[in-house]
Structures are given as C-alpha cells and as structure tokens.
Length: 324
Ligand code: PBG
Image 1 (spheres, helix red, strand yellow):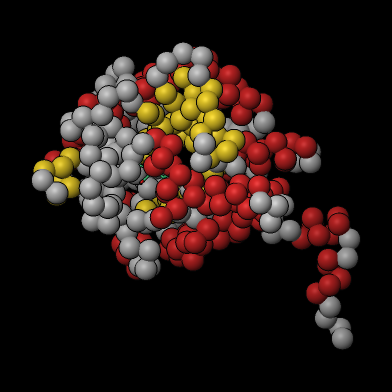
Image 2: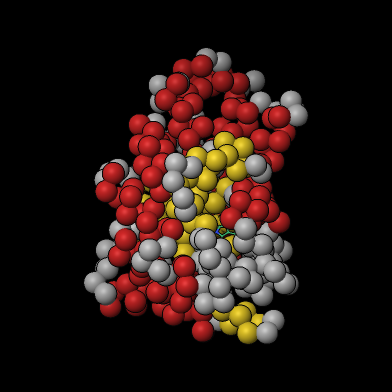
C-alpha cells in the first residue's frame, strides 16, 4: 500500500492542520428573546439555556456574548398585546424596537439583527394579514415593510424577514431606501420550510397559528428546486444574504444554494434541533459538546457562512476554553 489515508490522522497537530472546516465564534448568531417588564431573566422551559430577557437585562447578556467572541445577535420579541393588525410589530415602542435601542446604546460594537415577521404579533398567529381563513399576501407586504422600517429606525443593522410572503424583500428594500436606510442589510429567510422543528420556538413566543398551518406560505420539505427558485427571487428583489431553515435536515439544500448563488448564506439551526440535543444529553444519550461541535461543523461544511443557533453561546465558550 503506497496510499494510506490514516497517515494524516496519526497526530493531533496533523489532524488540526488538514482540518477543512472550522467553526469560529464570528460565524455564529445568537437569537435572543425580549419581553416587557423589568428585571426578568427567565429560562424558557422547552429551550434549556435560553431565556426571556426584559430590555433592562438584555445588555448584560449581550456584553457577555461579546466577551466570548460573538459578534451578532438576532432579536425576537414577545409583545403584550396581539391584534389582527399586528400593531405591536411596527410600533416604535414595540418590544423589539426597545430591545434594539438598548443594545445599540449599551453594546455599540454588537451587530444587531431583527426577525421581521407578524406571527408573534397577530391574534391568529399567522405571519401575514388574514381574512376568513386566507393568509393574504399583498396586503401583508406594507405591514412587513413598516415593521422592518421601525426596526431600522431603532438601529437594526440587518433585518431578517421570516414571513415567506411573496415580494417581501422588494417591499422592504423599497421602504428602507425611501427613508434613507440604504445601509441596512436584508438577510432573507429565503428558503424556509414548513417544519415541525419550530415547535419549541412557537411555545417560547406563543406564536402557534390559531387555525390551519403555515403550509400556504412556508415550503414543502420535499422540495429542492423550489429552494433555488425562492433564492433566485430574493436575490432579484435585493436580498444581501440568503438563509436556509432549518439546517440539519436540509444540509443538501444548503449545499445546493451555496453552489448556485454567490451571496453569503446563513443557516438557521432551529429550536427543535437544539431542544432535541438538549433532551438527548439530559437522557444521557449523547455528549453535549461533541454533538454540538459535530452539528455546527456539518452545517458549515455543507456551505453555510453563518449559523443562527441557540448553541452560539455554548460554542463560543467552548472555543474560548480551547483557546481558538
Ligand atoms: C417567525 C419565525 C419562526 C422561527 C423564526 N422566525 C417560527 C415559525 O415560522 O413558525 C423559528 C425559529 C426556531 O424554531 O428556532 N415566523
């Protein structure tokens, strides 16, 4: 035998030298949940290690993330009032808007991204405006654009529309530009599947649809070519970054989108994927850190440039411990 692949695996330093994919803290985006009230840091039951933070407690968390090397956070909000118009989504005093202002003023170097969607803010729990049992597309666009604009006004650097209405990227771009926010980027949830992996998140933000499901706007998990069409459309409409969501069950899609398009690509390792690992670890089935590293490395190897993950803090802490 002249060719022995095991030679390059024979020493730890050699393995590190030929390692093709590395996850860096700067690749990770930590999602954060803001709630009304004061002095609240309450663990989310179905998402161990994740918390609801009142705005006055957010900055301390964001500073800690920064000290671990995390450079970006994605803000979700739990409003006090839900209504048919999703009025708290675009209110300047809305929970996300307050959270963004607090982080921008207290942790100025952190990149602040916001999730732009209506499902947390509508009484029916759908991501758009509703008449009867129909989720309206075009009527939802101005509401989403207003929401993105209010986030930009509060200081968001990047807005991330997750609603899956057709034409939302163009509508948001146009509104941002019309108000002088040319520099605010759009990271579109371009390829978002109607996935059962969002379960814990919907409990965490009380956004489960009150009737029907999200299948008329989120994608069928069986579809691959549709992911390419959705990505192409978002690029045409002015997206700055693309995203595939969820991640682990969609690694093939991440790779295809990465091969086909040149935009930076995010992958959202979602709540159910995270909760599954935490549950398996609690049941003594898996090693937490090893599984976390393997999953995040796989997502990056598949082609994601950045990973939105509830593991961001755990992973950054581990990298820091290992001196990487
Ligand atoms: C809002 C939104 C959802 C997630 C991110 N933005 C839920 C959904 O579409 O039902 C899911 C995130 C996660 O599961 O971690 N539309």
